[in-house]
Length: 241
Image 1 (tube, rainbow, N blue to C red):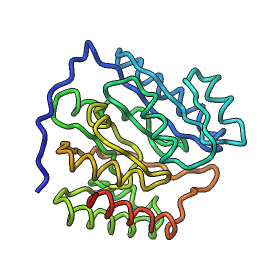
Image 2 (tube, helix red, strand yellow):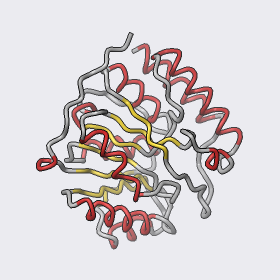
Image 3 (cartoon, rainbow, N blue to C red):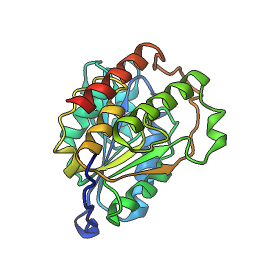
Image 4 (tube, rainbow, N blue to C red):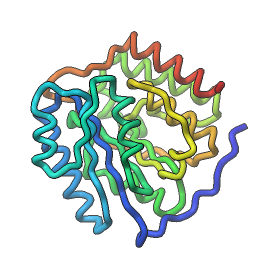
């Protein structure tokens, strides 16, 4: 039985929001994502920082990110999970948001993620593409939907937590929870590792229905079979160890 923690409300006067955006060869979309993210946070009238972690891009993602005013860090190409973990170490905020750079996530929805944490109702908010949203189903490849559903079922079996989108990269988490974790993933399996380890720490988890847009530029680098095997392995090992 996983013990739930008592989530305290966040003092907005002391709140700093860190947004981490991993990027690998997304020069066509990263600029727009940064601009919309900054505009959204400015409207909230809260201190914030936008951290772009460049995972060894060979296009103009790095230059574009700098031009748009983000704080940019460059890593050798090792994977999305490794880039996000680097961002976690650099982030100064007490609430940390992650979202993708390919345009599939809507930065305007960030306040929805922060609300439940600020009010003390949750420690981790996850953006769900499937929570009461039939429109998003049609936008996601069938293989990905099946895999996600399988991983959700396994996580529910192991932890008792009913999650509809365990593989979502759009989330917000208290820094105090992250500080108690040791994360090791280099790729897409980070989402499962973070979720399960948060649950094991007693974190309260809530899901936020999101609008999902399938990328229109470039191709997804997710390999349903190779990455799927890594995700499965990560779920089991994160729960057992």
